[in-house]
Length: 113
Image 1 (cartoon, rainbow, N blue to C red):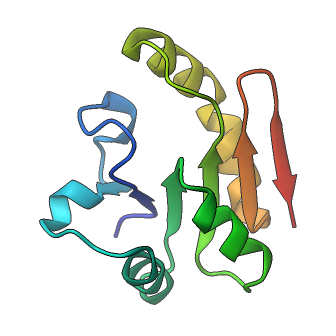
Image 2: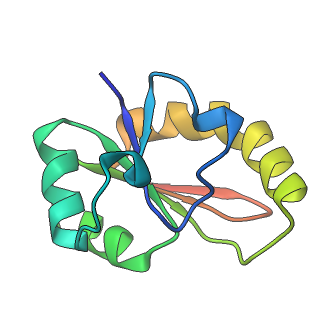
Image 3: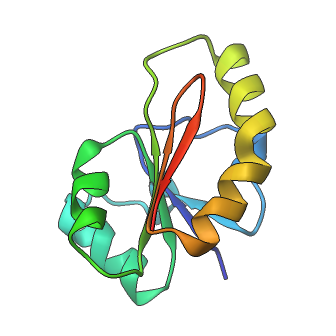
């Protein structure tokens, strides 16, 4: 069962998220509202990975699941994005296991219990 639900605003073809632990919204084959994505992630005890602030806002007022990993840096070249996320991903995973919200910036990671 997948642990991470990758939002449509993040790259689809991304080797880090191509394993059994991740499912991309594009693979679900539908255009869902944020509420539908949230409900799906809650039902399946998943962590949402997104650039969408709506999910991090909702995580602040809800009890997990779902947990949220909020990618909070602007657009960058795919190579740079891949290098940054690949370097940070092990720390992000550890933090997401015990925190409702993990915010990922280019220069730091912040976690909210």
